[in-house]
Amino acid sequence: MRGLTECSQNENILIVHVISNRKLREYILAGHADAEAPLTAWFKIAKAAQWKNIVEVRRVFRDTDVVEKYTVFNIKGNTYRLTAEIFYPSQVVLIRHIMTHAEYDKGDGSDYDSDGD
Image (tube, rainbow, N blue to C red; front, side, top):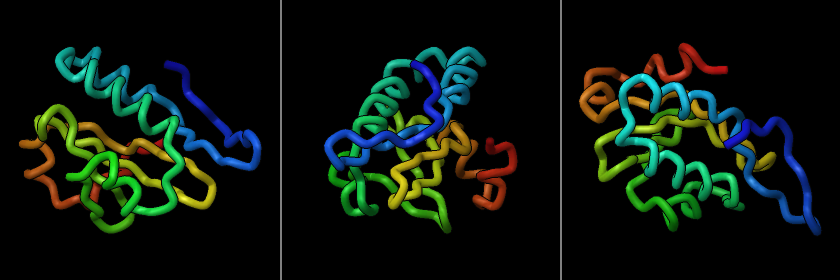
C-alpha cells in the first residue's frame, strides 16, 4: 500500500484518496497482526470508493458511526475501531486513529485527531 496525497480524476469521476496508510502499517507492526487483513481490505475498499455522504459509506460499512466530525468504522467484527475524517467534496479520507474496541470505549472521542497528520 502506498500513501496517496492528491485527488485524481478519471472521466470526471472522483476517486476517494486515503491520505497515508502509515497509521495502518504502524498499527499492524505494533502487535496487531490480526488486524492486517481487515485493515488492508478496508483500505482497498475506501480508496476505490466514490462516497458522497455517510449514507453511501453505510451501504458498504453498515455499522459505521459518526461522532462529531469523525467517521468511526468497525474493523474485524468490531474488534477494532478506525476513526477517520472524510471530506466528501474532495474525496479525501484522513485516518486519525486505529484502536481496539476496548480502547475506544475508554475515550470520549475528544482526542481523535490528537496525533493526526
